[in-house]
Length: 111
Image (cartoon, rainbow, N blue to C red; front, side):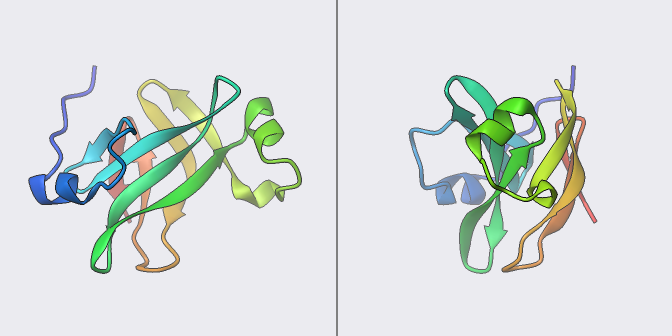
């Protein structure tokens, strides 16, 4: 079982959607699940981006993920190597602030 990760209080205050469950990856990184018809089909990766907390989307390369995003090119899907603890590939890069890293073993690993 991975160790518990505490979110930085300033980062937590910047998470602006109260109705979402956030899963900490590092003190200043978290994810929330994207569900479609009851299946986990992707995630939002939350991080500090310029002057606010922002999120980038990831679609899972699963039958349910493709059903939720018909017509998306194959390069817009991530492999789920492990659900628990979560490990996906390839890496995730923010196009706005260039935040870049991996989710491995339920933790954020910066590049």
